[in-house]
Structures are given as C-alpha cells and as structure tokens.
Length: 215
Ligand code: B4P
Image (cartoon, rainbow, N blue to C red; front, side, top):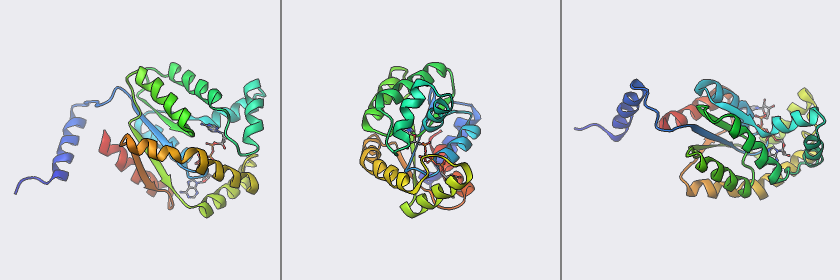
C-alpha cells in the first residue's frame, strides 16, 4: 500500500529541514491563555529553542512601573486592580517592538493580544509587513489551578496583582475581554489548544509538536 498521509507529511517536513527551506518570512507565535496559564514560562522556552524574540507585555509594563515612567504610573493604576491597560498604550508598545525587530526570525507574543481591538491592530501591523500570525498556542487550564499557581507566585515574588481578589478580577476580565479571541483565531484556522496542566517540560514537548507540524 502507498504511504499514509502522516508518513508523507513527515517526509515533506524532513525534506524542508534538509534544504533549510523557510515557509515563512517570520515565524510569529501568540501565547494565549488565562492569567497564570504558563504563557510566560513556555514563551521563554519557545523563544530559546526556535531563536525567536520573546515579547511579554506584562514584563514591559512592569519594567515601566519599575522606572516610574509616566506610562508605568498610568499602567499601574489598571494592573493593581486586575484591569487591562488601555488598548492604545499596548498597541503603541507592540508597534515599537515590531519596528525594532523587522529582521528577526519571528516573535513569541506573550500576553498580547488580550482584546479584539488589539488582535485586529496586530493583524494590520503584521500584514503590512507580510508576516502574519502563524500560530496561536492556547494553554488550557482550570481556574482552581490558576489561583493556586498565582498565590504561590505571590509568596515567591510579591507581585502586586497576585492577591486573591485581584486574581479573581483578572480571571473575570480574561473571560469577558480575552476569551472572544478564541473565535477570532479559530476562524483564521490558527488556534491550537494544548493541555496546560502537568510538568513544564511535558507541556513544552506538546507545544513543540504543534510548532514542528507547521515549520
Ligand atoms: P502578565 O504579565 O501577562 O501575567 P500573567 O497572565 O499572570 O502571566 P502568565 O500566564 O505568563 O503566567 P506565568 O507563565 O508567569 O500580565 C499582567 C497584567 O499586565 C495584566 O493583568 C494586565 O493588567 C497587564 N497587561 C499585560 N498585557 C496586556 C495587554 N495586552 N493588554 C492590556 N493589559 C495588559 O505562570 C504563572 C505561574 O505559574 C508562575 O509562577 C509559574 O512558575 C507557574 N507555572 C507555569 N507553568 C506551570 C506548570 N505547568 N505547573 C505549575 N506551575 C506552573
């Protein structure tokens, strides 16, 4: 009998790797999931393995707060309450990340987009550069697990938004404002759910399978 579709796919992928053929100008991956789902944890590992630029909007905002910049002081008023920072601020941040990384192999966006407006603006920016979003990795977890992780992180790092009432607000904001993006990316056939409970290495292996299937 002839080759199965899976075997054919594997042969084509090996051929592509052998000749270092790059199907995309850039590889742009969005890490998607609720607060504490492990976006940041996994994004660092993906960026390292695939030589991509890791961009965490949460880290950028916390650095601005640390520098006591005007932007940071404004962002803090939203973050301390578990609210999202206004879209215009985040879109400007991502625009400047793109400007600085035009020749990068790709981006791992961790924490962006979080609203439909952000997703639409991101598509406009990337399409203008002919480098669309290639893959949305969604880490699937449960609220109880998220709360446990973030309360643990509060003890370790003392992050201001990892208090129980603020965590609950962040989860609500995620459901209201960020979850609608699932339909947005499903419609584009870019949404790839990954089970997000288990060992960090096990989850990373599942994510790599999704990426390797694409490149
Ligand atoms: P973020 O910094 O993005 O915070 P997060 O969603 O809580 O983190 P993440 O999911 O990356 O969790 P992590 O890997 O650290 O945002 C903070 C705030 O910034 C937002 O609430 C908002 O106000 C603002 N903001 C950021 N981006 C914005 C945007 N685009 N628009 C508007 N506002 C924005 O993992 C959490 C913990 O779990 C860690 O302690 C980790 O060690 C642990 N962990 C990870 N994987 C695990 C596993 N498999 N098992 C057990 N523990 C695990």
